[in-house]
Image 1: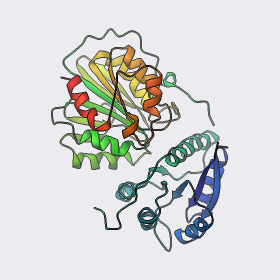
Image 2: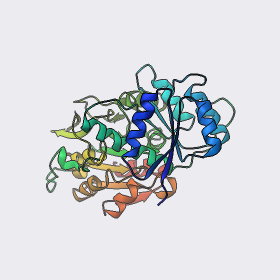
Image 3: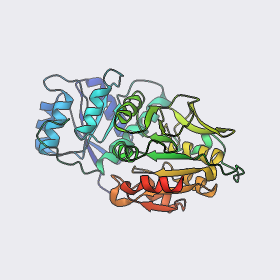
Image 4: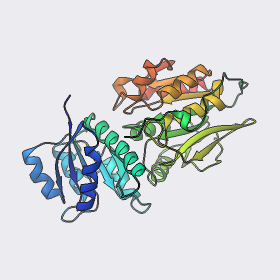
Length: 354
């Protein structure tokens, strides 16, 4: 099996050293070089072409966004932005996705052994997922190892559903690599009176608020980063905040979300498995669940549990996925009622919730 060749580009020698240590924990990743600025990176790329580049945004000589744009207009290579995420810098990260970056991760920090191990899992998984993508060439014109835990770590498995079917429905969605574009496609097609939606997209903290705000400006419905206790309302989508788990709860006829700390589940926080298991417990036949593009198997077990509780379950098809990992695993687990293309998911959801 070929190793994933990674080039690290960051002006901080300490960050480059820390990233290298993280990648060295995964035998399927090979570091082919590290550079303090884009010009040094270009020299390395004359000798070896990496499968993935991790790229900082704020650097001397040439900033990361300029380098990313040049790269994507000339020789597209999967790029993962690795930077210090702040609310002030969120617009830069949205622009990075528009320019073709596959994903965004937070710069690793020195911390406890557990923190290092969790960071290793997240960073390595993101980079390996990025290596499977085929970035499109950008127009030159300006553009507008810990044990793998399951959902048991957060809440017990659902018992056979005893919840009565109601007229109020909820839609639960999980996605990872390629999910930012897929979720935008999905939400911009949802009508103003659609059922309430709760979404887990694998994304770092402080980035989800900007993602939700951008979607809110594009959609007919309201989109916001979820806050603990938020009601799941018609015409509104809640995005799980980065680095927090999101669970669906029910009180009478009202559905709401609970935002919780906890360990990585299925290698992620937030985890789709946690969201889906909570949906199996609290919503059952009153829900529709959708699993979209992403690497790995987060959501596969949870979707099967939802299916067994009476939920109608949908998986994105391989042709429209950036990475056909999560949907494929859900299908293999036997928890999917229907496999449809990304463009057909909105109609399928609406038809099943009316």
